[in-house]
Length: 128
Image 1 (cartoon, rainbow, N blue to C red):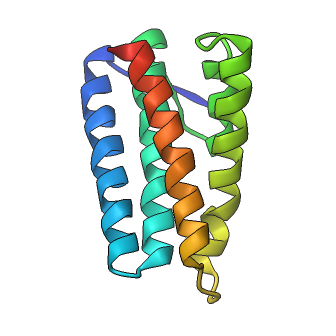
Image 2 (cartoon, one colour):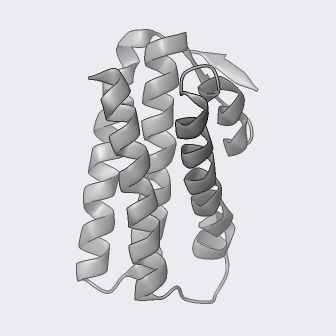
């Protein structure tokens, strides 16, 4: 599903993406690895919402992976595949991190932050 969004809202999504990434890094410092991963996931979601809002006046509003259809028209194929791989990795941790009792490791959190950083950097390069 897709929702129409005023392109002026892209700035808000980008701010949320940057703030979530900052909170993810604080989570690692505080050894709150699950929270670090949750924040990294939300950073990536908001970064891609900023991109699609800016370019298409739309954002994915159903499954998180609905965003792939939107970003496919924005990123060049190699960049699209890289972002899709990293976002899929992050979203794959969402249920486990947010709703399951098992705790995540520092390495899991570091990997999540790397994925979110890469996605955010690619989005920033396109939005400027």
